[in-house]
Length: 399
Image (cartoon, rainbow, N blue to C red; front, side):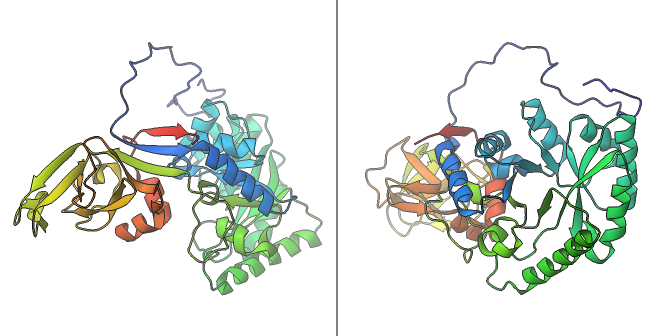
């Protein structure tokens, strides 16, 4: 990418369009541990979300962190095919990767931008989230130099206390944005802190604060294209907060933000994590398994080794969890290593070398859910989905 003026950074970014064509590398056999992304389910989930939401409410599909581990391009394309009005990312690099892949849809850069990043935002038609006067003025200068009118969404802090201008101070910043001829105030938004909890009292307080700003805009006859507050939990449980657009990341992936949110019939998980049995060991009473000798066999046991470990994003646990083999759960024994974990297949006598095992997802009538893995990790489903490493290949399936 060549700078268009002196304000552009000297450091150039990768541009697929100008990169010399290299010979295609040989296609290697699929690694014996991998992730399957069911694109048919993904498309179906977007259809279910569209059928649930009010027709006039638009969708912003959040595809940050590689689409929550599912592939930003895969999720983004499915979202746009389903009619999404916007894509949302956290970083400039994420946005530029989508642009380099040919997506010209509106992209909202949800994270903060340094002034050195702003020329890239303007050049690639990104919508910036703005939150303070210095940022607004800097972006206006950059857009003016490029002879562009850059769209912005003003971020309100209604109680999350992370990013955004405090709701009580929002009007003066809104007026500053409106005074910049090189900026277009396209939207205003905020973010729920607890929309997916049974107790909605704080979410309702945030909604009240958000509405107070909207009332000030209405009193001054300031009309915006997009007012958005809801994440997935808000879409499900707070219909009074839908406004013009909802931002959903987890829901189209077939995962609910909590156990108490409203359920949508037919929604199904998109991701499955699999591995093949790479070794089978027969051990006797008193013998141990793995680093630290964390498991000792009480009698003769049959142990399967799966070539996937904490280096791939599986929780580093000991004697907890398991894998599905032939539709039954083989309990994990010993400690998880960087590249391997071991499961007890004594009660699955038909298990053989290179049989398929499921570590996240369904096999037959049995299922290991993302919440099950999150419990092992003492974390949340978001962490599990985004925690699988890049060395685990992603394979698209439609079954």
